[in-house]
Length: 119
Image 1 (tube, rainbow, N blue to C red):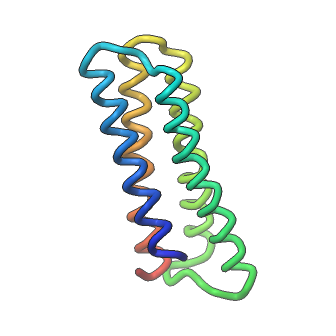
Image 2 (cartoon, rainbow, N blue to C red):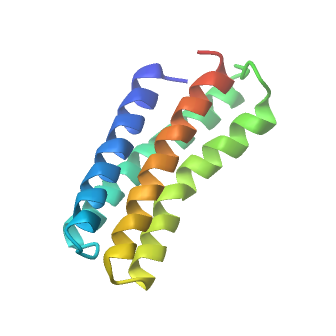
């Protein structure tokens, strides 16, 4: 894996979590700007998914196993879109809390991906 991409994705997810958490603190639902932020973090997740799969097909191996690595890659890819959909369903401050929680989960998944790959 690309360590720089993992770091950038994790930091972007934490920034998104802080931004959505601030909106929840101010009793605001997720707004269009939050969804643009979620799209950026999701795009980073897609890039990471593609790079991870390409590296696996080239014969590189994850230190802790390919199956668990792919599972975490797919989880990181799906985390922010799932949180975004749930925040759309809840158009109160709790939608912002859901989006913030998704960002935190994504950051944790990035740390775990780094460990699984052998970082």
